[in-house]
Amino acid sequence: METRNYTYIVECSDGKLYTGWTNCIEKRLIQHNSGRGAKFTRCRIPVQLRYLEISETKSDAMKREAQIKQMSRSQKVKLIAEGHLKKILEENNINI
Image (cartoon, rainbow, N blue to C red; front, side, top):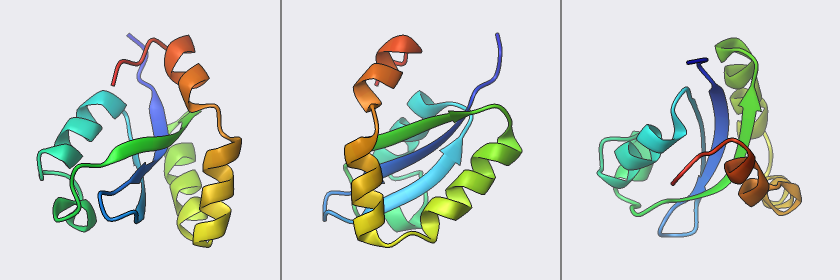
């Protein structure tokens, strides 16, 4: 099976946004919501996936994560609004 690389944004229980990257989005969301994810999300669970991009390589996903982290909250909210999360999940058979 081909490894996929994802850049994602989750919304925390307090409304804050967290951006990360992973090669298994299903597993990563479970980690975040069980308190074993990033320090930032541990005290802000549950988190909900709000945005997802698929990248060709790990490097591309990590670069995109860095770009998104530099964005303002309003830019991230716009990115989420313009994203097609449901379509991406369906087309790639991702069950979260």
